[in-house]
Length: 62
Image 1 (tube, rainbow, N blue to C red):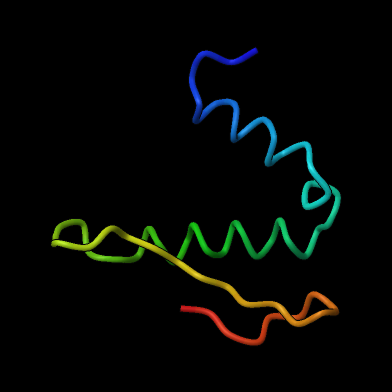
Image 2 (image 1 turned 90 degrees about the vertical axis):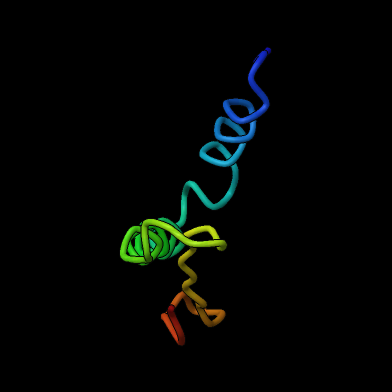
């Protein structure tokens, strides 16, 4: 059992169905890259988003 809820959520996320789907993993990594490109300061957090169609093809990102 995890004392840290963040660690528990991470463990659950990487062991679920998405962990076996390379398209989802690539999209998540790209989302993190996009977030890292955001401004380092400001009132809003840095975020990145990648939207996939049903076949796993990227249809939008930002």
